[in-house]
Image 1 (tube, one colour):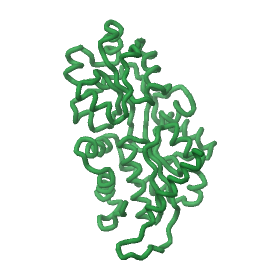
Image 2 (image 1 turned 90 degrees about the horizontal axis):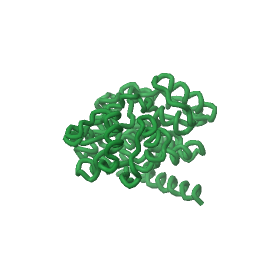
Image 3 (image 1 turned 90 degrees about the vertical axis):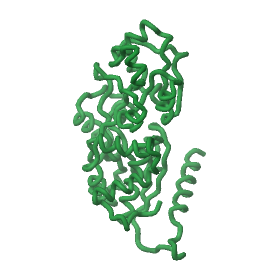
Image 4 (image 1 turned 135 degrees about the vertical axis):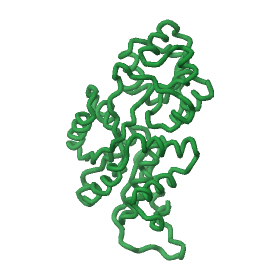
Length: 312
């Protein structure tokens, strides 16, 4: 039943994407695909999926976007062929999907997960200079008042004042092996269960800004970190591994359309952490639409022309 529901969603998306142009006549130009592009539920993933979809469309592909999935769901969808391509993070691939010990070196992490996934027919294309690591955040004023600058400072404070700080997190970070429990083990402390609030990913920053929580998980490339005057606590024991972003595609799709590797390289070679942070900020802080942000970035980088931008 779950498989049938997923296929119906994809079919619906495909039908929506095949509407006639303004003249009223169907577009019968030969197209490649369709390529089903997945994304997780947070802003950065949606922007990356939009970039990919727009750019592939401008190069002759039909695309379908399926967004809003968690890491285990999107991984399962890729493995079983319900989606063909999505952007994943190297640390997530190695530690969450393979339960391997973390690597502190980005190249080592990338090569290991690339080799492991190749055995499953999942191909990691070139990675971007984009490291979107987990981070632990506090409001600047709160952190300064408590003398907390590093995760070691946080651990020492929680051990002395176990009921004082409320921690906000999405459900995935609480349950992941490279998430909260591993962090607590590495730094030797525990948030009491009663002091942990489970929040949707996008709300953790708002809860922190509005003082509904004192500490929260977040992502290093999220524009709201600076926009909301939050500070990432220094990971002084290097707990979090590299989480560099790269497109992952099914081998049979790449065999059929090998040009996808070069097209995705056009994007990854131009992306880095600071750029992605700015793009995320335009969506989350300035309230611009993800499609327009992605499209304008492609135009600014000479990958598409303004008059060629594909409709959603």
